[in-house]
Length: 179
Length: 279
Image (cartoon, each protein chain N blue to C red):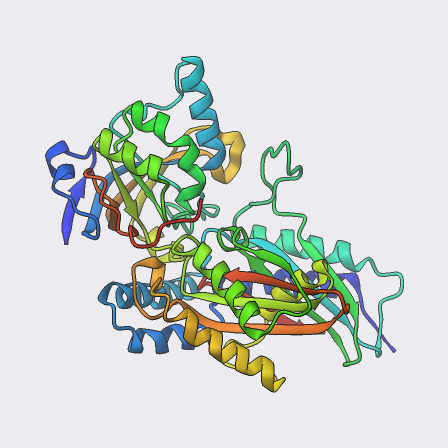
């Protein structure tokens, strides 16, 4: 088991191999479909982003509502493939890590290699279990998106598997997605 | 004739929304537990154990099993002994869903306009109402997560297709879903009817206990053959490899037209949730 913390250290990141089990501690930003759409549109226009993604880890997650007394609601990963078409510009802008579930496109895999980043897998459908690894949550932007808002989560020993490493090795390499 | 009140429907749906999202179905829990004992892949076993742990935590803390608390699909069956005249069944169901989802701090995942999107709310859900021969007023709520709903496939097959052609299509749909939609899957299949009805059957098939095979012998044989074939695909829990790719295959069939053979595959993730009550 490898322990990692954010911001991800470039040398630690380079030593990760697809299939490695990791416990991640530190800060991750939730962002999914609509937040990606807005971030990519802003990057295209050269506008200032309401969130700094340089060096960050993005978690494809839209949690359930937070109850009083809890840090967060149920908070497992959503299907990463839906973000594929919007991922390369984010990696170009300095994104270092992504957390989701399922396969990524060849373009994303190449970009992960090019920009020396990493794609982690979290266990889908284990949102109650994963919520216990979140210490606090802070709204960052896009509150109007409801569960799709960008929220900064502080996590402790968040269990992950390396899906695609900085060399572009893919744990699902034997299961190519039909294009 | 027994009069049914809107208040009773609303309360019933509220309870079902809370129960379905928090308590893993017993048949699904048993299937995951059995699979964890059989699974040869260490990564696969680890995932299956996490799922059992997740179900325990969710029930203990009344927390949603999965953050995707789905698009609720509600089936209402009205028996001959029930008088629902003057009752707005659909509206009562909608109100019950909103109450249950709000009370359970579940996720507001529904956008009012599919094109313009906008801020998500708790409803509206999908309501299917039918009049049936069995007594009572039965309500079933299935919160369908969209990671797996997105993997639905419909094929209007030629009427001359044989069992193998149908099985190949179903296997193809599961292979396409691959590691993306939270395997091990429960595969709901609708065969026959019209295109829309095959899709509804595929979803209804998910309501049947996953350890029970169809009562139609040749359909049960197809289910068994598919379970074996699908578990040889090697996708495994969360796609990380192993022999647990599906926990069950449920097929419902219906008469169809001489010129056609609609087949719909509605995949469910391992968190197959549903709850029902008879009023």
